[in-house]
Structure formats: C-alpha cells, structure tokens
Length: 120
Image (cartoon, rainbow, N blue to C red; front, top):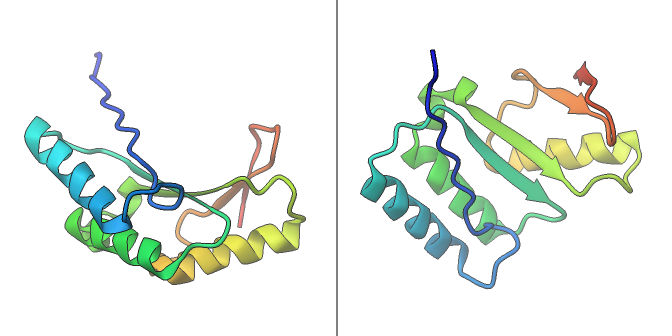
C-alpha cells in the first residue's frame, strides 16, 4: 500500500523577516487552499524563542487542535550541536514551557551525528 506524503516547509517563525503572525496566516491559507489532511506537524525551533514567535506557534497549534492530536506533533530543537547535554536539556525544556508542550510526552534525544534515540 502506497500512501502519498505531503511535506510543507514553511517560512520559519523564528528566522524570518516576516511577522510571526503573518507566517501563521500564510501557512493556514496554504493548508486551506490545498485541502490537506495533516498526519504529522513538525515544529522546529532554535536559539532563543521570542514572545511573538511563541505566541504565533501556539496560535498555529491551537488552530491544528494540538490538545486533541498531541501524538501528531513533533517538536525539534535545532542548532544545538555546540551545547552540552545539560544546556540541551534546558533549551528543550524552555521551548516546551514556552509552547505549553508536555516535555515528557514521547520525548527522545537524537544525538548529533547519530541515529540512536535515547528516551528522556
């Protein structure tokens, strides 16, 4: 059985010159216009997440009904290769706190340069 896979790589909430709420609006319109059924949503963050960015991401999560579809969301903290384990854990914890995400829900570490996952 072959199932089509649609991947949307949007303008970033955290690394764009566009206002974060405008990014939400653009992505929403694209999804609505293409009548897509989403199976996974991957939210990628890095560095310090500003309040406006966190609010835009939370707005997007609410629109996609995160509270009812938690297993369909993946939160990835990127560009952490220069951080030690304690700093990485703190960064991920802060991201989860800012976004209202359950830190322990299916959380795994994926070590840089490795495909081995370690449960948190």
